[in-house]
Image (tube, rainbow, N blue to C red; front, side, top):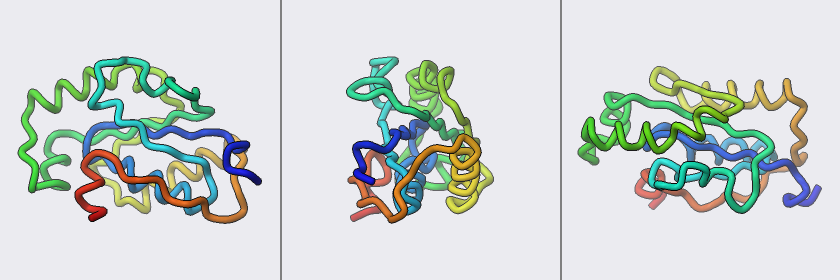
Length: 142
């Protein structure tokens, strides 16, 4: 199946919540997934721009989790709060919300895959090519 004909899954969430990692896993499983850097935008419905997703997945991580996952970045309470506020619209419209604080990337992927299978979301029978990493995932991709 041609990728553009597959239903679009968009992944939004806090910085260091695992968006890029989840998108990589979903694409490896044949799903047309893309990250949205909503946490950096003042446009509340950025996640809907260009193409509305068939499924919207929201990933959450608290400030302690951000600091644990990315000790090289100085996360502040104010910056975390700003991201939280910027994500309010997406969070309210998410089809699936996952708190990633105490989960491994594999566990997050399994939760998302179970949800997509339960919905019967179509996917390719082969891995889809990766998309460029965004946000804090870029630092780990280099």
